Length: 230
Image 1 (tube, helix red, strand yellow):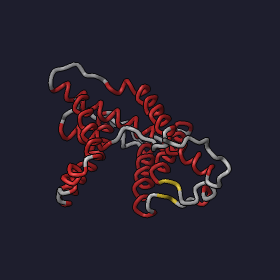
Image 2 (cartoon, helix red, strand yellow):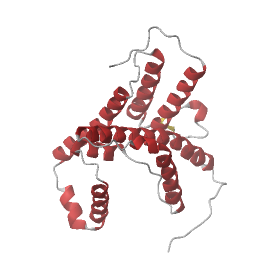
Image 3 (cartoon, one colour):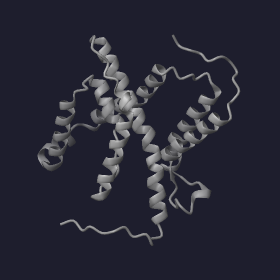
Image 4 (cartoon, rainbow, N blue to C red):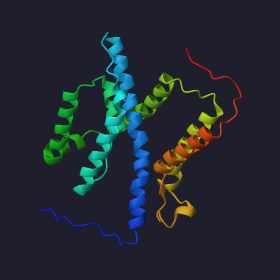
């Protein structure tokens, strides 16, 4: 029987937990949004190849974020972790070109069964590390490539110094923070709230949003006309 208790707010790390969850939510919102745009791009492309009507999944971004939030609320109520849609799943669909809902549900059921049936789990673990490592390189590499494809499809002007600054900041803070600082950035001004450091991915998202906001308010100078890819 689960033990249901009310939150305790007099703990020394209460503020860290509350603000930390809020910051991570800021990071997962653009993540979830980008994933829907990415998978929508590939589904529309496949539909065009097959002569079908494009589903236009990106138009459901509001519903996607709302369901993400409800999912996190339910997970938190039962003591689980927050979640969102994942780029790994997107990569598998893009690699296999299989975007079938029933196929995804079946894969989820199989994954749950594997977690409860030891012999089946052991079969997965018996796959050589070289094989799973190669698949991981392919899988996670495709996540990055999807981002590039999305920027190309949306004709993001990477000749614009402002956009270059935003992309560069996000890449360096997000990737460099994970490599150089173990995933948590020791920002002095936030040590009181984040004694173990600020998550690099969340920091990259927040910094990118803030810099973009600055450029919206204070327009950076244009050094050339926008370059539009035909």
